[in-house]
Length: 317
Image 1 (cartoon, rainbow, N blue to C red):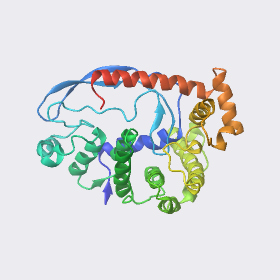
Image 2: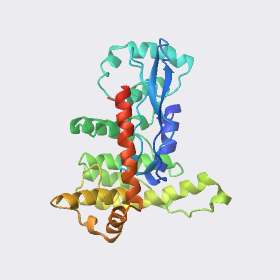
Image 3: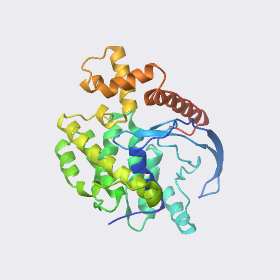
């Protein structure tokens, strides 16, 4: 049975909103924080951020925004413990044995989120949902072989989670599972996975925000968004598109940004979507310095600056 520990609750609660929504462009604000290692008491500095903005995401859940995603986790320099959340005294006792084991030592070359999932799996009473592993897949863009391995690991875990129509997180996870199948070119499995998402529970009316409250309003919007994305993903799968960023499945502003780059460089075989009315309107807005695409480009520059700050601090591999 799949369960949710503290790390999964934190991770899951933000996934649907990060997938579906954006915010006004806000620069990240990096700062140094002192962290004390839960095992051994070693103290070290870690680069965090006080604020950042996002504007939708890739179909694997990775946000577009003014920070680095996933944000680097504090890692104890000496024993390599990943401090992805606070631990109870009982868990600290378990951690002492876990991080000293040969199994954990063998994972030192894996990403911090991959190792965090490994730890959480062993601390939890029941197998937790793979939200940390999902984020680990975002760290593999530079290495196709590693990405394939992480996506396959995510598929194996996400497939174990039962769909609950009342639980948006499980519906979102199933969508992410379908995307992972798509990226690994298992197109039949991707389509079959989409069929397991009950569309009826996504066809909801959006309540009045003041009467129903923000959470109910946001969940209704996210359910409708997910229904639209599922329909688009079916078409992308039918095309045999296994890319990380299919233009139809990413935010319009980012699609316009990508299209403008491809058109400007004379890249062959440009998707007809780039010449659609809505994308051309976004490109025109960006050229005039207005519109979402222009904000996206500006915030992307902020993200690059944030990445440089993190690398300088030694918190990013």
